[in-house]
Image 1 (cartoon, rainbow, N blue to C red):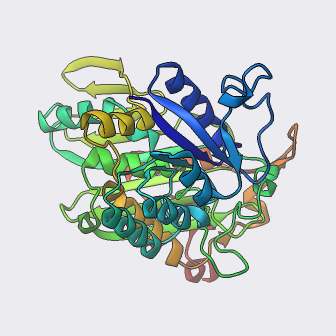
Image 2: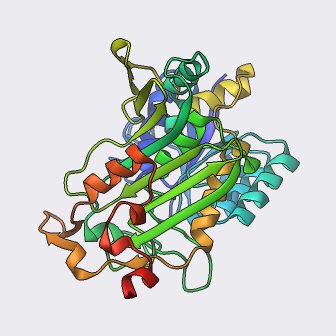
Length: 391
């Protein structure tokens, strides 16, 4: 059975979804029935989707009217890759028409909106998969199996580190970029922990098995910014689970030397490091040589198709992101990120625009994941509390 799909948001990160739909269409699993964009895609952008002059009738319908597009095309799945503040509204529009969803992360800009979209999906009896692609990695169940089997002894905690770089143009790419809320009061929460490196947080929670709202005992965010934005670009958060385990995630978009993000599981007799973008797992134990394995990954849209056609279980149902959304809510309701002092960062030239680099941040991010400490506990002057800094 070929499933008709509508893609909302086909540029930027949406271009990745467009390529993925093209791949799955080639396998006969889906058909791109429509594209929702404010400006229609060009024939070049639609290459491979019947946009050529010899087959214009096979081209997907294009419209800025998402609801109308769903109705006219008979879509069964909508892939939503639009600005964060629009997620809930578009999800509700799809649910009202019985259309199943692959919704980009974060699913909503607040826990309240997340609950609303969950309710809409439940009432319409549609599947709602959240686009945390790393949670489709076969490494996650493998790591959880290693932990359950005692491969690294008693788990003491988990750390995650993400050191990326984004130039100043990154924050000018859209009106919502780098914002905590829009001028009309709508939440955005486009911070490093909740959008660009949200996978680090979601993956750490998934590896630990702490994905439910009730799995959180406490959440301690520390939010900072080097760039001239509202949201955070250099932050960390420590979650203490109801099982008493600590999960610390440190992230920055101001790295000196950008590197692959990872999740690290600390055990009493070893540790497991998971580079989640690469599906690579390194197991290190005191009594055995290191084991380095690269796992496969199940694509989330393909999984959603298999769910609809063969009854496969969803890999990332909306309910499985409740703990992540509770962390996002802690970030949303925290005091605004503190601007770093000018001495804490420097500007380096770039091809498109200069970018800001926080001095020593690469080491701090790694140290936080290694020791499960917050930046304020690692000796960075700029991370001390305002009260301590004043003394």
